[in-house]
Image 1 (cartoon, one colour):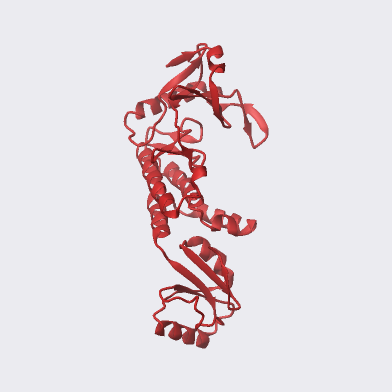
Image 2 (image 1 turned 90 degrees about the vertical axis):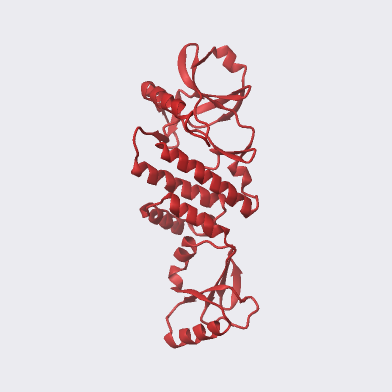
Length: 305
């Protein structure tokens, strides 16, 4: 337990502020002081649940302190913080590193490497019944090539005394979205809002898991080139490279033309990955990720990524 006075606290430097608390720096420690009021629904001020349910918060934080000895790859809470004898927050390590939000311009290979580390760290937390539900790029640091997850004390992290498949699923689903954002998955910003909302609803129906996120990262690692062509695409076009994976996009299915197209592509050693209807194009692009995607429209290639 750390007990300081209000005067001592005010002499410390503020290094950050979130919805639940303000973070101060003292030597190599970060003091997170919970706010009295927090925003609910984006605008209403309500009593901070971390202080409103102080007994539950202290129990949860003490559990994280005990687990800190067992968790190898993530630094949890080190001590409880009291100000003038009143419980007010927690003590955590101070990180002198870069937020993942600042790393999105790194080469893809480096972002994949750090995503793998993040995923491994997240799995260790879940294996120990810690379920973060607030994965975002401002809650992860890169410190000397090590990945650190922060803000595991607030109400958006569930610390259970038993395994919870429901919380594990929710936690990995949120992590899945965060990793895709970090890897600059073009589907995050390419589609109109109504399509993105439809995709989000669909993703919530999927049973996300460690395996599916690992597969996503693996897929991102492979240098694949994907070319979407329509029935009228000129197969002599030099952008149709040998080794390209081709998706044939059609408006109205013409069986004879499709057979002719498939035979021509096969004669060049180019594999047709799939045939899809144009109205299904958005869904297909969103569900798959490749290092380069090109889309043809009336024999003109529009670069997607």
